[in-house]
Length: 285
Length: 239
Ligand SMILES: Nc1ncnc2c1ncn2[C@@H]1O[C@H](COP(=O)(O)OP(=O)(O)OP(=O)(O)O)[C@@H](O)[C@H]1O
Ligand SMILES: [Mg+2]
Image 1 (cartoon, rainbow over the protein chains, first blue to last red):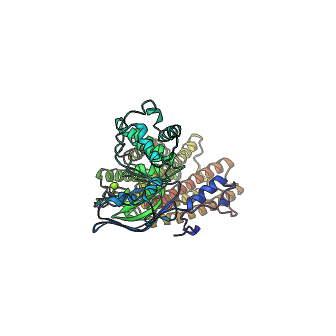
Image 2: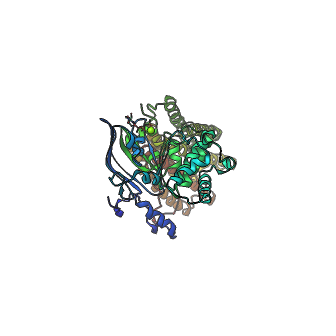
Image 3: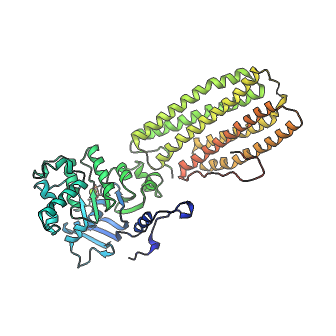
């Protein structure tokens, strides 16, 4: 898998169309845009004899939010779990093909899954805080990975993580209380804070808002948009509105296959595939 | 690729899209009718006919408001996507085009009223033949655009876009003809200005019809309407 520029699937208008210069920053942005952070090549996943993901090719670009949509059971969660090898523990689950993170094969025999899961973090559908204090929920993983050598450093990590997850103001006076005592939306933001505390590069989210009210959902979506500046995010969502709101690109799955992947606006206004059209307009089933 | 209001999982959505389509067809029929009558009122300098057109403009406006409401409700309730989204976007713009065509028919009717109030009903100061010819072409274009919309026929819509060029040519021809008319002192400046404005109204009507046709193509195929720059020819520069 090489990163030659010809693999860039962005068509940009030539800068000569504009009578101003595209800024350098933007330039870097665009260059960065072209090189995939993660890449799936011919990935198939079986649960015993059942094919759940069927020969998927997908690029995940840096600093993008990529939404995975598709009917229930089409393999979105399965593919997502492959991206940080969460499927390893599932009995009978067999992954074939190649998945790379910055060109490194994550299924290579010398790949250690613990650091992999630090680099590729995951937020689940149901908020699952540890039965510990809010502080410890965040501090646990950094402690495990030796990211802080002093108490002050750890305090700093906890505070910034909670800040970035938009939770600090709500919990700063009760850091010692149990994380499970927070509301659902707060718990989900706590889990996000926990995920970003170890400075991942890619964040995987599996229906992170399905248990949340519109305001908590809006807060998470705002957070996703901010996190995108530093991280790459892959989100599985059943809400097409949510996919349209938060993502730059959308991939549509059907029966384990990727039917279509493209710019979110394109997918939701004028998809190329009939199947996608039928799904997004609600003509399924 | 068009799902044309069949078989959404939510059946009510099919009904809403169908209702929107019908609403626009009805508005189109009324506007086309207004257009035909306005030309007739000019032809016969028929004051009561002209007055009727002006009165009926209220109905056109109400239909616009009502279609806008339907569009708004669909956007809010259904968050349409794909071809549904394109249909609703097109509908909103087509309603606007129809409303503009309606405005222009009132302009023509107002002209008849003006002639009566200033006692200039003597039409031989006009080269009305040109108005009729332009009017005839604009009626055909509007009619054909509305048919393309009703039948969701991209092929016919493309023909409308093509046919619209005829109207441009007719308009230029009529302008030149009018100048000859003026130079031969068969008309005065007042009447000439009125006539140019009428011709311009008809030319605009054709242009709106062309836009409708392009919106039909967008709705069906997702192809963005092209923006036409006027050719640089030796004709009068008109937009
Ligand atoms: N642990 C498992 N053991 C066996 N089969 C599984 C397992 N997990 C998922 N599957 C099967 O794999 C297929 C894909 O499941 P997956 O959970 O990836 O779908 P999904 O797209 O995430 O669906 P949903 O939108 O409902 O969450 C389904 O047919 C499912 O039954
Ligand atoms: Mg799932």
